[in-house]
Length: 123
Image (cartoon, rainbow, N blue to C red; front, side, top):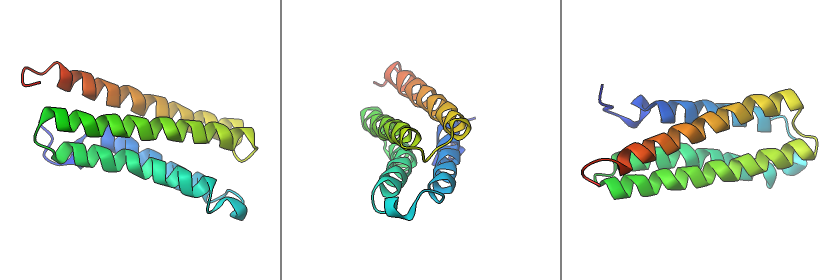
């Protein structure tokens, strides 16, 4: 089945799950982090799905890939922020493990999407 809308993409759906999870997790962070780590994490996670959506809307394969690479960059930024949150004691090991598994899965999906586009005859 060919995706008709960006929300049909499994990579976007997994990304949206991550958005919801990050919002839930960060709502429990100390209030002193609202304008620092919480804000950074929420911006990064929203950027992932936003770039997936924008890439989907682009007509050219190279343009699509560019936005998907931006999503990978935002995901990597979020992974770093999760490590910081864990290491300063804002995330318990179990919660970190759960969200980390989702970020790794999303990374694999994004890279698979990029690889498939790069191997397209129209690339």
